[in-house]
Image (spheres, rainbow, N blue to C red):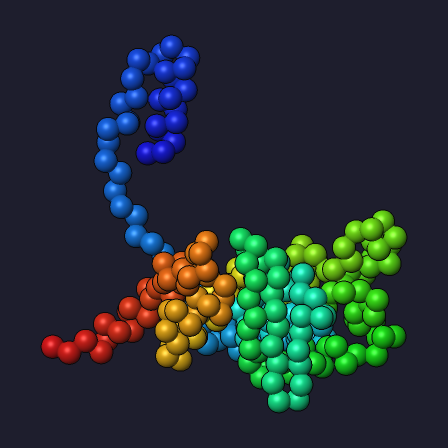
Length: 242
Protein backbone atom coordinates (compact mmCIF):
# COMPACT_ATOMS: atom_id res chain seq x y z
CA UNK A 1 0.00 0.00 0.00
CA UNK A 2 2.86 2.37 0.76
CA UNK A 3 4.35 1.77 -2.68
CA UNK A 4 0.99 2.44 -4.36
CA UNK A 5 0.51 5.64 -2.38
CA UNK A 6 3.98 6.87 -3.36
CA UNK A 7 3.27 6.10 -7.01
CA UNK A 8 0.03 8.08 -6.82
CA UNK A 9 1.87 11.04 -5.30
CA UNK A 10 4.33 10.89 -8.19
CA UNK A 11 1.42 10.77 -10.65
CA UNK A 12 -0.11 13.86 -9.02
CA UNK A 13 3.20 15.73 -9.32
CA UNK A 14 3.39 14.64 -12.96
CA UNK A 15 -0.12 15.88 -13.65
CA UNK A 16 -1.52 12.41 -14.30
CA UNK A 17 -3.79 12.39 -11.24
CA UNK A 18 -5.63 15.08 -9.29
CA UNK A 19 -5.95 13.14 -6.04
CA UNK A 20 -4.38 10.18 -4.28
CA UNK A 21 -6.94 7.33 -4.32
CA UNK A 22 -4.86 5.36 -1.82
CA UNK A 23 -4.91 8.11 0.79
CA UNK A 24 -8.22 7.15 2.41
CA UNK A 25 -7.65 3.40 2.40
CA UNK A 26 -7.31 2.07 5.92
CA UNK A 27 -4.16 0.03 6.31
CA UNK A 28 -4.33 -3.27 8.17
CA UNK A 29 -2.46 -3.51 11.44
CA UNK A 30 0.68 -5.58 11.04
CA UNK A 31 1.50 -7.61 14.16
CA UNK A 32 4.83 -6.81 15.78
CA UNK A 33 7.25 -9.66 15.28
CA UNK A 34 9.44 -10.84 18.11
CA UNK A 35 13.17 -10.16 17.71
CA UNK A 36 15.27 -13.26 17.31
CA UNK A 37 15.53 -15.72 20.16
CA UNK A 38 18.14 -18.36 19.49
CA UNK A 39 17.22 -22.00 19.78
CA UNK A 40 19.08 -24.23 22.22
CA UNK A 41 20.80 -25.84 19.25
CA UNK A 42 21.94 -22.49 17.84
CA UNK A 43 23.35 -21.48 21.21
CA UNK A 44 25.27 -24.75 21.47
CA UNK A 45 26.66 -24.42 17.94
CA UNK A 46 27.85 -20.85 18.48
CA UNK A 47 29.43 -21.55 21.86
CA UNK A 48 31.16 -24.61 20.42
CA UNK A 49 32.55 -22.54 17.54
CA UNK A 50 33.93 -20.00 20.02
CA UNK A 51 35.62 -22.75 22.03
CA UNK A 52 37.13 -24.38 18.95
CA UNK A 53 38.39 -21.06 17.59
CA UNK A 54 40.76 -20.93 20.57
CA UNK A 55 40.83 -17.15 20.32
CA UNK A 56 40.61 -15.10 23.49
CA UNK A 57 39.55 -12.05 21.51
CA UNK A 58 36.74 -13.97 19.77
CA UNK A 59 35.67 -15.35 23.14
CA UNK A 60 35.63 -11.92 24.82
CA UNK A 61 33.70 -10.26 22.00
CA UNK A 62 31.17 -13.11 21.90
CA UNK A 63 30.77 -13.04 25.69
CA UNK A 64 29.98 -9.32 25.71
CA UNK A 65 27.22 -9.88 23.17
CA UNK A 66 25.87 -13.16 24.54
CA UNK A 67 26.36 -12.71 28.29
CA UNK A 68 26.07 -8.90 28.55
CA UNK A 69 23.78 -8.00 25.65
CA UNK A 70 26.02 -5.26 24.32
CA UNK A 71 25.42 -3.63 20.96
CA UNK A 72 28.19 -4.15 18.43
CA UNK A 73 29.04 -0.42 18.62
CA UNK A 74 29.32 -0.67 22.42
CA UNK A 75 31.78 -3.55 22.14
CA UNK A 76 33.81 -1.60 19.59
CA UNK A 77 34.11 1.53 21.75
CA UNK A 78 34.58 -0.12 25.15
CA UNK A 79 37.50 1.56 26.91
CA UNK A 80 40.03 -0.12 29.17
CA UNK A 81 39.56 2.48 31.92
CA UNK A 82 35.83 1.73 31.94
CA UNK A 83 36.41 -1.89 32.99
CA UNK A 84 36.63 -2.84 36.67
CA UNK A 85 37.56 -6.50 36.89
CA UNK A 86 38.62 -8.81 39.68
CA UNK A 87 38.62 -12.54 40.30
CA UNK A 88 35.20 -12.33 41.95
CA UNK A 89 33.33 -9.51 40.25
CA UNK A 90 33.36 -7.28 37.22
CA UNK A 91 31.61 -4.21 35.88
CA UNK A 92 31.89 -2.04 32.79
CA UNK A 93 30.75 1.49 32.01
CA UNK A 94 29.36 2.02 28.55
CA UNK A 95 29.83 5.55 27.23
CA UNK A 96 28.56 6.84 23.92
CA UNK A 97 25.83 4.24 23.64
CA UNK A 98 22.76 4.70 21.47
CA UNK A 99 21.23 8.08 22.23
CA UNK A 100 24.38 9.25 24.01
CA UNK A 101 23.43 7.47 27.22
CA UNK A 102 25.88 6.22 29.84
CA UNK A 103 25.32 3.12 31.95
CA UNK A 104 27.34 0.89 34.25
CA UNK A 105 26.49 -2.80 34.38
CA UNK A 106 27.72 -5.75 36.39
CA UNK A 107 29.08 -8.61 34.32
CA UNK A 108 27.99 -12.22 34.30
CA UNK A 109 30.85 -14.47 35.40
CA UNK A 110 31.27 -15.85 31.87
CA UNK A 111 31.70 -12.35 30.43
CA UNK A 112 34.03 -11.32 33.25
CA UNK A 113 36.27 -14.38 32.85
CA UNK A 114 36.45 -14.02 29.06
CA UNK A 115 37.40 -10.35 29.33
CA UNK A 116 40.04 -11.02 31.99
CA UNK A 117 41.56 -13.82 29.90
CA UNK A 118 41.76 -11.59 26.84
CA UNK A 119 43.31 -8.65 28.69
CA UNK A 120 45.88 -11.00 30.25
CA UNK A 121 47.37 -11.82 26.84
CA UNK A 122 51.04 -11.03 26.47
CA UNK A 123 51.57 -7.90 24.37
CA UNK A 124 53.49 -9.97 21.82
CA UNK A 125 50.49 -12.22 21.14
CA UNK A 126 48.97 -11.82 17.68
CA UNK A 127 45.50 -10.90 18.91
CA UNK A 128 46.58 -8.86 21.94
CA UNK A 129 45.33 -5.29 22.21
CA UNK A 130 47.65 -2.35 21.59
CA UNK A 131 48.98 -1.48 25.07
CA UNK A 132 49.00 2.26 24.31
CA UNK A 133 45.37 2.32 23.19
CA UNK A 134 42.51 3.46 25.43
CA UNK A 135 40.25 0.82 23.86
CA UNK A 136 39.78 -2.81 24.85
CA UNK A 137 39.61 -4.07 21.27
CA UNK A 138 42.06 -2.45 18.89
CA UNK A 139 42.43 -2.40 15.14
CA UNK A 140 45.27 -4.19 13.39
CA UNK A 141 46.10 -0.76 11.97
CA UNK A 142 46.13 0.87 15.41
CA UNK A 143 49.57 2.47 15.10
CA UNK A 144 48.81 3.96 11.68
CA UNK A 145 45.44 5.26 12.87
CA UNK A 146 47.01 6.98 15.88
CA UNK A 147 49.55 8.69 13.64
CA UNK A 148 46.60 10.21 11.79
CA UNK A 149 44.93 11.17 15.08
CA UNK A 150 42.11 8.71 14.44
CA UNK A 151 40.54 6.29 16.95
CA UNK A 152 42.43 3.00 16.93
CA UNK A 153 39.60 0.79 18.15
CA UNK A 154 38.35 -2.26 16.30
CA UNK A 155 35.42 -0.94 14.26
CA UNK A 156 31.89 -2.38 14.28
CA UNK A 157 32.55 -3.48 10.72
CA UNK A 158 35.70 -5.28 11.88
CA UNK A 159 33.76 -7.06 14.61
CA UNK A 160 31.07 -8.08 12.13
CA UNK A 161 33.77 -9.42 9.79
CA UNK A 162 35.21 -11.55 12.59
CA UNK A 163 31.71 -12.72 13.51
CA UNK A 164 31.17 -13.95 9.96
CA UNK A 165 34.58 -15.64 10.00
CA UNK A 166 33.65 -17.44 13.21
CA UNK A 167 30.34 -18.69 11.83
CA UNK A 168 32.05 -19.83 8.63
CA UNK A 169 33.88 -22.46 10.67
CA UNK A 170 30.62 -24.37 11.15
CA UNK A 171 30.24 -27.70 9.38
CA UNK A 172 27.97 -28.06 6.36
CA UNK A 173 25.40 -29.73 8.60
CA UNK A 174 25.29 -26.87 11.12
CA UNK A 175 25.87 -23.87 8.84
CA UNK A 176 22.21 -23.53 7.71
CA UNK A 177 21.14 -23.25 11.35
CA UNK A 178 23.33 -20.23 12.13
CA UNK A 179 24.01 -18.55 8.80
CA UNK A 180 21.42 -15.82 9.42
CA UNK A 181 22.31 -15.18 13.07
CA UNK A 182 23.69 -11.66 13.44
CA UNK A 183 25.79 -10.33 16.29
CA UNK A 184 22.85 -8.14 17.32
CA UNK A 185 20.74 -11.29 17.67
CA UNK A 186 22.90 -12.13 20.69
CA UNK A 187 21.52 -9.00 22.36
CA UNK A 188 17.93 -9.98 21.57
CA UNK A 189 18.57 -13.50 22.84
CA UNK A 190 20.04 -12.11 26.06
CA UNK A 191 16.78 -10.24 26.65
CA UNK A 192 14.74 -13.40 26.08
CA UNK A 193 16.93 -15.44 28.44
CA UNK A 194 16.82 -12.73 31.10
CA UNK A 195 13.03 -12.63 30.87
CA UNK A 196 12.85 -16.42 31.13
CA UNK A 197 15.10 -16.22 34.21
CA UNK A 198 12.56 -13.99 35.93
CA UNK A 199 13.98 -10.52 35.28
CA UNK A 200 11.41 -7.73 35.19
CA UNK A 201 11.08 -5.63 32.05
CA UNK A 202 12.42 -2.68 34.06
CA UNK A 203 15.57 -4.60 35.02
CA UNK A 204 16.19 -5.72 31.44
CA UNK A 205 15.62 -2.17 30.17
CA UNK A 206 18.15 -0.73 32.61
CA UNK A 207 20.73 -3.41 31.83
CA UNK A 208 20.41 -3.08 28.05
CA UNK A 209 20.32 0.71 28.09
CA UNK A 210 16.72 1.11 26.96
CA UNK A 211 15.98 4.54 28.39
CA UNK A 212 13.76 7.49 27.64
CA UNK A 213 15.17 11.00 27.31
CA UNK A 214 14.57 11.64 31.00
CA UNK A 215 16.46 8.48 31.98
CA UNK A 216 13.47 6.28 32.84
CA UNK A 217 13.43 2.66 31.60
CA UNK A 218 11.94 2.47 28.09
CA UNK A 219 9.68 -0.48 28.79
CA UNK A 220 8.02 -0.40 25.36
CA UNK A 221 11.35 -1.02 23.63
CA UNK A 222 12.25 -3.84 26.00
CA UNK A 223 8.81 -5.39 25.60
CA UNK A 224 9.42 -5.67 21.85
CA UNK A 225 12.70 -7.45 22.59
CA UNK A 226 10.96 -10.03 24.74
CA UNK A 227 7.78 -10.73 22.79
CA UNK A 228 6.97 -14.45 22.66
CA UNK A 229 8.11 -16.16 19.49
CA UNK A 230 5.86 -18.29 17.28
CA UNK A 231 7.75 -21.36 18.51
CA UNK A 232 7.09 -20.46 22.15
CA UNK A 233 3.39 -19.94 21.50
CA UNK A 234 3.22 -23.22 19.58
CA UNK A 235 4.76 -25.07 22.54
CA UNK A 236 2.46 -23.34 25.03
CA UNK A 237 -0.57 -24.42 22.99
CA UNK A 238 0.38 -28.02 23.70
CA UNK A 239 -0.05 -27.44 27.43
CA UNK A 240 -3.38 -25.58 27.17
CA UNK A 241 -5.88 -27.35 29.44
CA UNK A 242 -9.24 -28.43 28.03
